[in-house]
Structures are given as structure tokens and as C-alpha cells.
Image (cartoon, rainbow over all chains, first blue to last red; front, side):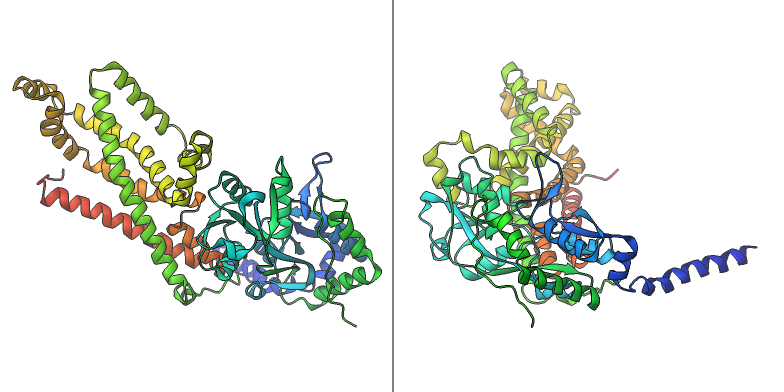
Length: 273
Length: 233
């Protein structure tokens, strides 16, 4: 009897391992069969992805981008909040189908996941007090600069200005507080995030975003590794949105002149013939 | 599981040096804090067992306050919360220094001092009261009696609990990373963020903490045995 149990157990375990490759039949089929696209987005990064104060819903530029992808597939959209630390493991484990969460397309990240073409060309800048006299990275020599841990920003600013000292906090709001108190002279990260922090202050006009582009931070949609069909679908949909003007409309809604996060649309999406 | 272990990566390039830098900051942070915590703890105990009521109240208040609030809250308080209380001209000078490290030392030593004070007090209480009375009778002042007769014996008794306070302090020093002190845990997280190999990075830092703690307790135990001739019971 016990032998039978062992055989049964062995078969269950074996089928579990054998069954795994079957799970990679293709994300597109999975999504269609399920009837929902599950997207990982930020929940505290206005205007990219955040919880609306009134409706308590996840909204923003990236959720709406995902909504367009879901509409194209003819499925419903489900949004899951992710953080910079959880997003890649969640995608690898299949908890989400894609990541649209202010994620810079970096070659190192290609080891674990795939990326779509760039959908937002962020660049790293400096947030300073207006009267600080700091105009560019050159003025940071011998000064302290705040950033957040684990971000690409700390490394980039150190490269651009080796004579500055980077102090890394847990979050950007803490780095901003340290800057307001005078412990660091500037906060550095992607310009749209800096805009968000600046606008969260009571007196946004006391602060300015200055300097040349310290580094390019092209945001791409994170996709499961080695799923060519799914990646093609996302890339083609993004390009179609650009060509039809749907992208520009979306951009204008979240980053246009009338918004708090005005960033002029000066780039061209990569469009394949 | 398709995680590929890569131990060589952790020590290649700059990463190995980051760990050493982090370990060195952890050592400085803990070393300075231990000395200050011992001094402050001794002062608190002396106040506590003196007969001067205001000093006793002050000491009891301090110990209860610092023992019963989370260390990470205290660190944030010292770093962010103290800002409005400091005069403007002093702040300008202060913030240009390594204020992050200094805040770490202040927070760790004031916190640990409260625990050391309580342990020292129990050590002192274990010494018969008659010894203090006898030393006072020979003409020593209260402070002299404490310094020459009571404290040397009390410290010997509390060495084992004192070791665990030191070890706690070393481990607590990792909380200083929340205000940007580049100690060992901070560096391990940096390596993780740059390599995406968290398992290896945190294994290395864990082993470093473990060896550091074991070395400290071994050293104190040896000193205890060899130099103070205390037989372990």
C-alpha cells in the first residue's frame, strides 16, 4: 500500500515538472482564454500610476496605456499595484502579464525579462531650491545630493559628477524632505518623478527642476522572457497608437500644458515601416 | 526555479570593495556607539542610584523613554525631526558635515545606553549594600566609592548581558541605512540593486555580521577569562 502511495506521489511530482513547459504555450493565448489582461502598475507615482483621491481607483498614464492594449485584444483589464522591487519577480512568476511601471529599459534587466519599444523617454534631472544657485551638475562639486536606494539615478549622478556625495534614502519624499531641510542640496531622478514630488509640496514655486539630462531613462513595457508573439503584439499596438494619434492624445491628457506635470512632447516613438 | 547562482559576480569589479567599505563603516559606527553608550549608561546608572530625587527621575524617565520606543523612529526623529529645533547658523555648518553618520552614532548610543544602564544597575544591586556603606565609612565620597569599589565589581558581573547589548548594537547599526549611512546592509542592497543577485549579496552580508558578532563575543569572553580571572559557571 505504501509503495502505491510513493508511486502516486512520484507521478504527481513528475507531472508538475512536465506540466511546466506547457504553461509557456504563449501569453496571448493565456490572456484570451482568461478574458483578462493583468498589468502591473505603480500606485503612488502620479501621473504615471496612482490612486485617485476621489474615486479610489488606480489611474494614470500607464493604466490607460494598458487599457488600450486590453481593448485591442478584446479582453478586460485588471491592474495590480507593483513596486520597483516586486515587479520583475511578479512577472517571472506569472502573477502579472506585463509591467507598465516607470521601468527603465536596461540591458541588465534583459537577463530576466523582455522589453517593448520605448513608450516614454524620461531623463534624469535635478530638483533644487530656487534660491540655491545650482544650475547644473557642475555646481554639485563637493555637495551632497539625495536619491533613493536601488535606483539607477545614484550611479548616474556619481558618474556625471564624481566630486559630489550621494546620500540615498528609502523613498524620494524622504530625499525631498532632506533637501528642504538643507541636508542635501538637490534630489536627482527621472524628471517626471521630480515633477510629481515638487507638485506635492505646498509651495511648488520654491523649487525648480534644472540641469542637463544626466542620463536617459527610456521606459519600456516589461514582458515575459522569450514570448515573441506577445512582444510583437505590444510593439505593434504601441506603434499603431502613435500613428493614429491615440498616443499623443493620451500623453496630452497626463503631461499636456493644462496639467500639473507639463512636459512638452518633443520625441518620436520608434516606428517600424 | 530558474535562478542562476553567480557567486563570482558578487566579488568582481567594484562590488567586493563596496562590501569592505560597508563593513568598515559598520565597525566605526558600532565602535563609537559602544564607547558612548557605555559612558552614558554609566552616568545614567549613577544618577539612578544616587539619592538626589531630580536626578533619579531624570534617569528613570530617560531609560523608560528610550527603551520603549522603536529605534527606527528614534533615528528618524534625530535626523528629520530635530531640524526645527536647531538654530539656523548652526544648521548650515552642521549639514555640511557627515550628519548622517553622526546621527547614526547619536541614535544608537542613546538607545543602547538605556539598556546598559538597567543592566549595570542590576549588577550594582547584586553587590551587598554594606560595601558601599563601608567605603563611605572609610572616607570615600559617593563617586569615589562607586568608581573604586562598586563599579569594577558590577561590570565584571554584567559582562555576559553586556555582550548581548554589544551584539544588539552591531545588528541595530544596520538601521542607520534608512538615513543614508553607507554601512554593510546598505552596501548589500546596493550590490543587489546592481546585480539582481539578492541571494548572494545578502548571504555575504549575513556571513560578515555573523563573523563580526562571534569575534566580539569571543574576544570579550577571552578577556573575561584571562585578564579578569572570572571562572565561567
